[in-house]
Amino acid sequence: MSKACYLPENLGHFGLAAKNYCHFTSPIRRYPDLWIHRVIKGLGVRGQGLGELGVRNSSAIADIALQSSSREREAEKAERDADELKKAEYMSDKIGMRFFGVIGGVTERGIFVELENTVEGMVRAESLPGTGFSFNERLMTLQAGAHTYRIGDTVEIEVLAVTGSKIEFGLA
Image (cartoon, rainbow, N blue to C red; front, top):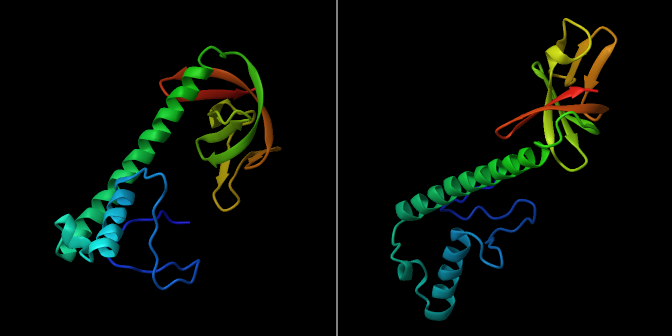
């Protein structure tokens, strides 16, 4: 699914088949939630709506929507970065330890393995058994001879290194 974004025009809600739709979270967590609360309050209580907020044209509303979407993406990235950093910090004293995990991603550079505790690390292709690996993007597999790695496979890994927020695994 594509990411939701804030827009100045009411597009309704496809999934709910609703012509008119407004969304906000409670408790209010984001600026757009606060903003729409103010709009609704202005419309319902005083019949003023957007004018109460000093917004009188669609260009200003479009700017607010664009900035809100952009800032939300930045906040999501910051949250992901913080999670990755804390997971790496947690794994930093587990170098040499072995764990079972599930392959959650495959690229030409290697496989990404996710552990039960949601920590994810990469096993580089050059450290996998076999030589001459070929990556099949359609099947999402990495293969060399009898060795094939695909999303969903369970593998045993060893924690090799933690550098910054990156965790490197090797097959055990």
